[in-house]
Image (cartoon, rainbow, N blue to C red):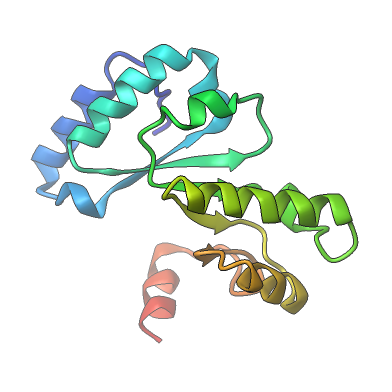
Amino acid sequence: MRRSPKDPCIVGLVRKVLGRTGLAPALLELEVTETAAMDNPQIAIENLRALKSLGIGLAIDDFGTGYSSLAYLKLLPIDRLKLDRTFVKDIEDDTNDAVICTATIGLAHNLGLKVVAEGVETAAQLAFLRSLDCDELQGYYFSPPLPESEAREYGMG
């Protein structure tokens, strides 16, 4: 189910789901696209703070593709940035993408945030991102998207 961080019902909905399922809030991480967070930043910040107070993790997805202000980035109560694959895919050949990845990872770490690089497909991308101490990597280099049953097996292997 997709909801916007500016949806006035989002906090109540998450609270209700946590109550019904018994899931520990620390085991849940919600991803918010940069564009959705910046559509109405004041309301989004308010709702994200309320969600954070429930004890859940928060991530900004597709970072770098929207029109966010760095001033808002410091106000968002997030735990991690997901560096969009558009910057990862050409880091081997495009100096600008390499610089953007380097700067974004450095900025995030200096703000106390973890970074997930999306769209890792080659050993060279993996090596470059590891050299920057990127916290988490995802993409076809590791596995294509899997159905739940196969994902469980993959994670246990």
